[in-house]
Length: 243
Image (cartoon, rainbow, N blue to C red; front, side, top):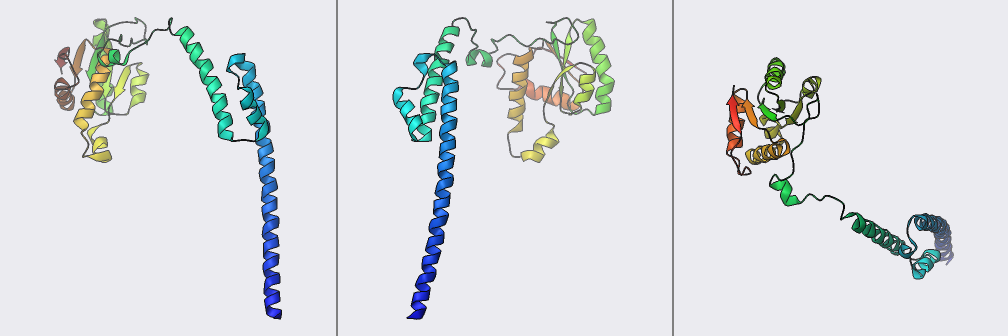
């Protein structure tokens, strides 16, 4: 009998400790809720200073904020007001804004980029394919490429698969990087990399609109052949020079 009483007393003590712990957690939650309500009211006042009167939360929403209802309901009410205000602002400026349609981007209707470094903005672009070359070979070719393009009133666009970007930047050249075969195979050899390269080259062509393409080396020539067979090109490549 005594053992049973001691066991009950021990259970009661455990229950009391649990109740005290739960009461402490309840007080902490109440403090967090009070702090949250203060933050919501402050945000609501801040929002009221920036939005027109008709976009402010309704009286019912205000009672929700003052009361301690669902935090999600409060955010939805505020978001609805912000969304309405932004929609009205967009409708006012839509008429004056110039829109670029997705179909224009895919069919080359958007004007190509203009190379702005080195003056003479708007000069024709020459695509220079330098795939498969090491840093030393590229460094030897760059002065020749710059000199030849300058004599023709053109700007070179270097297509490289070597991440020696500091070399190209030192010459102030524009360039586009495509990953080399080794990197592609290391990532996943089973992917359709030829299709990826063709798509990238088609995007680069629409982006810069080169009037001529020059290829240096065997790897560059193979890439040029792949480019000419691209299903993403709706017209033949421009005049191609091979070196």
